[in-house]
Length: 413
Image (cartoon, rainbow, N blue to C red; front, top):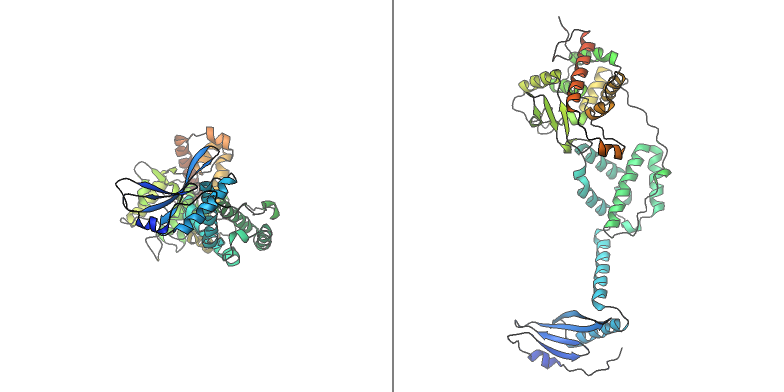
């Protein structure tokens, strides 16, 4: 594009321009000018009009940008204006494109994106869930995709990978697909990819879930006797019994801290970060549970954690410890720790307890979102009666009808 105006400035004019009390301009023609600031800096600017509106483009500072370079940038900007394009908007778009390219090069590796996603979402998960997610990703995804640019990973790549995992571990494949979906959605939101390429869950085998084995209530006496006679530690035995009495998940019990309890009131308040549902959970303690906890506290009056790890007392015992007890007692083929929740739920539902109260006690979330929004009842009194009734049932079954309050697992003389 040729200039249709005369140029006014020279290198010597610019060099010799001295600052004044107020900023002033030295015009070069065609809207290009040099603004001399009171502090001595000299700034190239281009004033233009487009669609009847005035705009200004900052070209740069002299002497970093000399006269010839400023005129060249001015020429390019004038060409944009002549074509109806705002040069300020165009510069912004160019900077965004360069930023996307930089992100693609520096941050676009699958391993980098996955690490950022995990860091951003870790707080939404319980510690055990975080650890499981990390194991699944480290084993199944990073060795295959870690060093690849995320924009270069296609639907066919993910289809092949997921089908391979599905052939050996269907449930893991479902978890991996969910992780991939979240990672690629995160990448799309960050502008690293245009669309999420993760295949539909329909490519994976259909779920064939087998219910976890739950102990027959008629066998609770045999189980209790075997537990008491075993060489397990006091803390391990107490953890197993607390799972039975409270209907809680194994990890929610073994992660317990003493500052969560009010034994005089019979209350246990579990913070949301320790709950699978990511919601705080209140547990009304039965007389049996309170007695069990007081005995445990007496044995370790200064500890902060109820069930400390033998190698690192600052951390809770491993969840595997309770599974190992089931194996050593010979009950692993007919029961699991999680199955005690099923045992309680089955008995209580079959014996006329309000299903909503049972579900609240189990800390289940209502899958019907509309119903959940309206049914916010906590059923606190009903839950206290329910858990006391359940503890009494256990005592009766264990003791052959001779209940000793607070002594789950011990028979009368």
